[in-house]
Image (cartoon, rainbow, N blue to C red; front, side, top):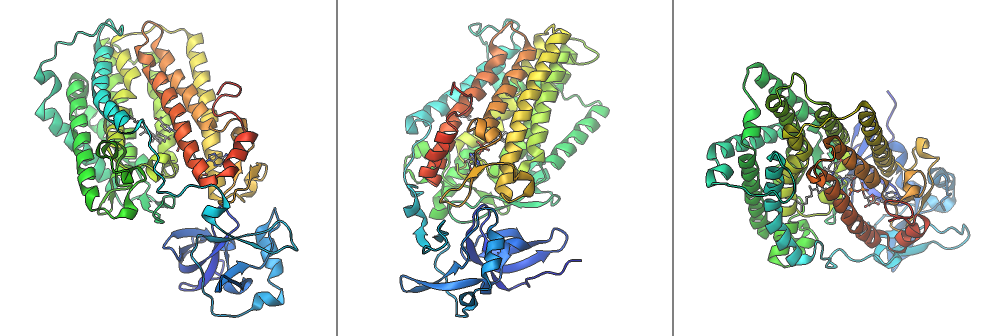
Length: 547
Ligand SMILES: NC(=O)C1=CN([C@@H]2O[C@H](COP(=O)(O)OP(=O)(O)OC[C@H]3O[C@@H](n4cnc5c(N)ncnc54)[C@H](OP(=O)(O)O)[C@@H]3O)[C@@H](O)[C@H]2O)C=CC1
Ligand SMILES: CC(C)CCC[C@@H](C)[C@H]1CC=C2C3=C(CC[C@@]21C)[C@@]1(C)CC[C@H](O)C[C@@H]1CC3
């Protein structure tokens, strides 16, 4: 077993991932199986780092800044290998300077000058760029009016879409529902839905699966998450198999789809109200940026608290991973059974198989890379309010499965050639989506990974680098491009009789175009002028020469 360089309790200097900046840490523990150290930064951030990312205090010298002793890396960085340079310079006599070390706050950096002879430049983060402070009020989704309109229109739109998909004539204007109260509400269905959520919650709490850390939040904390979405999906699969074997018909869900959607909507409302009320006692540092806006409607929609927990139970992570993604593939599977039942088929239609397979692949990918969801805008930046509660509990399971629902009553004849073309289109989208996401995530984890050395990137004064080659040099959001291509490939198996099953294609394209502006706003805030430089180098957002 390789020997370790640092002992628990040692004070050392650790490199902030993705940057060349070192900060004081305390060694908390060491895991010999992964050879990773658990370290604690002075601001309370904990992280797992490799040994080569940690240096002894003696490798750094003390400099006086504003009358305070602060630690600076003695070495001037070499572009390719900052670590080697640091080790070379350790031999300098000044570097052995032993003093009681005191450090300024972690946010104060030394910017290693390109000029080896020149003095090191002391910068503090906000002055280095035009980065806006976190408190700067940003109004998204059209503010209070946009939020109110979204909350009022989303639930009716959902019922409209579900109703239309179950109509034989699915043309958009053929909307003459003869609903009674009992068509929309059934307490027994609500009970079953609550049981389903309880089951998912128990699976979420299973103490199996590795622990991952989320990104450092605006409040400086990094949350711990249990990664067990794939296991939960597998266990739900087993449960479905057992129920089918016992001849307990899951078609009940299809027969009561409206009531299930209504139950999910009510529960999402209750959840939104709960998180809104409890956020009143949340500390200021746990609030999202939108949560500080002060407008009741807007805050209710966007979410006031960033990551509400009940004990160790993270509501946002649970609803995004377990409720949304597992609910989506579960509903798809119900539609597959319903199609066989309604159309008296021995096996599901090719269109239904394609829709199920494509979306299952997407969900499996998301769960396999569950850690990456932790860095998404929704988990890292957005509060947990109506938008995410309704989005995850209702919109994803019931609207994302719309193509499958449509196919139950609308058989589609599809040629072998068309099937092959659709598979090719989905594969094309998936390859872009997967390559782009995997590259970015691997690069964010370890920019010095030798396997990524072929990639070009630009440095930023924030610390992390921005990729400018491969898919990330092609357009600024290649993963969105892949996602959009897949979205349309999922609609095509529904044929061209009606536009209704193409709703998902239009919705996701709109969602991701809007998301580009949200993500880019965050990036401009974080990277300042460096982001503008990046935009000049990679001028198109999603489609070259178009957008
Ligand atoms: N099906 C659906 O309904 C939805 C699916 N998605 C999918 O989820 C996935 C995640 O989406 P999302 O979180 O929005 O976006 P991204 O995964 O693209 O994350 C954006 C972040 O990536 C980093 N980044 C941007 N450009 C670069 C670059 N050139 N080099 C390195 N890092 C860069 C920045 O973070 P930083 O620099 O801070 O690390 C930026 O904030 C996507 O594949 C998307 O398609 C998203 C929304 C809805
Ligand atoms: C006004 C509405 C109801 C808006 C709802 C938006 C939500 C449906 C989406 C917002 C961000 C999402 C993400 C995903 C699913 C859809 C929602 C919740 C993923 C979990 C899908 C799988 C990807 O691999 C990661 C995505 C992160 C964002």
